[in-house]
Structures are given as structure tokens and as C-alpha cells.
Image (cartoon, rainbow, N blue to C red; front, top):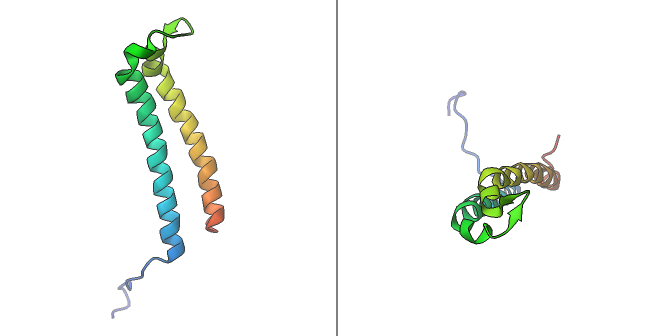
Length: 93
């Protein structure tokens, strides 16, 4: 083997578990955001429009602002949860 070649290394079980947990968290958070933005803002809009929030129909509110608020909250949750996951697998700084 030449000096410039990098040998194939298999990822350890801990690294695999870390990535499984990371991807699982991402999928869950993306599903929540999808449900709020597409589900509440589009699919369930007519049902939700019978309720009012701040003087606007709830379905309209989710389509215009609610999904953005949910997305920002999910980002903060992701940061907190990833810090815990990184500490669990000893990957924090």
C-alpha cells in the first residue's frame, strides 16, 4: 500500500449508533414539521378554519406563520437534543 492511500476503516458500533440516533431524530422532526406545514396548512385547512387565532382562521395562520414558528422551535429542540446525543457518545467539545 502506498503512503498516500487511506486504508478502509469500518465505523465502530458507537459511531453507527450515533448516526442511527441522529438520523432518527431528523426524521421525526421533519415529519412533525411536514405534518404542521402541509397537514395543518393545506390538508386540514378547511377544518381548522372554523377556529380563530389572533383574528385569523387557524388553517390560514398555520399556512402563513404557524409552520415557521414550529420550524424554529424544532431547530432549538434539535440543538438541545443533539448536545445530549453528542455527550452520550462522547463527541462533545
